[in-house]
Length: 306
Image (cartoon, rainbow, N blue to C red; front, side):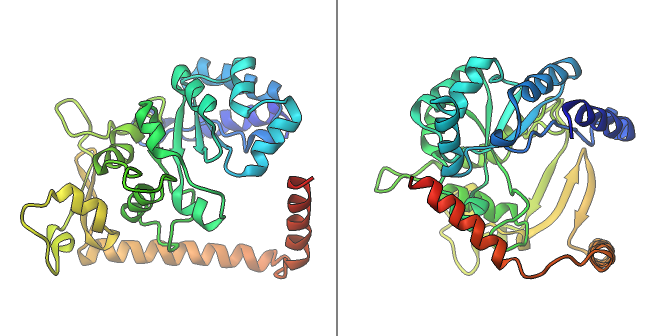
């Protein structure tokens, strides 16, 4: 679609969700789908629209080495340097994945106030690389942790995703670690800054939304954990969604481990699956993608090594 058609679609979505947006339940963000598929003109139009409407832009960028190579061949410089030069880089934009950032890119992002979101399970599954979390933390970058729709075990377990992000941070050796509290902040208070008008502040204090998750301490300590260990360290090392007992949003319980909530969850799963089956039956498509995938593989493998 053209950029005008895209912005018209965004307008319709915002109008349809106006009540939820006003009440602080939903935020709509602009989402150019990868730097190599979006013109500079479109990006700058999105920037103007975002600033005029108090919105953010979220862009999957430098997820793969192929994207980094595209920028070098197209402009003779990195995506981040190019975005800085055209005036697109700033606190209104967040970059997902951001695996193939170099030191200059990280410095430019730090100076601009732009945000980063790491998607560790997705990067592992796609063999894309690992996010330079330690350097991002050293520079004080605003970073969050995202699932990218495909967590490690297809179970959308955000607690496990925190652990994957913590352990798979690119650096090796005895000095390669990142403090567990930094990773927890990425999952809470720092991640909350990825919204133009935070749906949650990511902290519990007076004046903030009462958004929190209750996790069973027994699930973190069994079969044994030394009493002197910090429960937050145990949460990062051992936490999974199986240990979650209740979830509260703005002070109201939105999920619980009791039978009533489990039945709601089961009903929702059944409705989702039924809808997908109906859509799939109407347009089954081709199930064997091997010929296409083979050509895609050959294209990128040959291009990268030219």
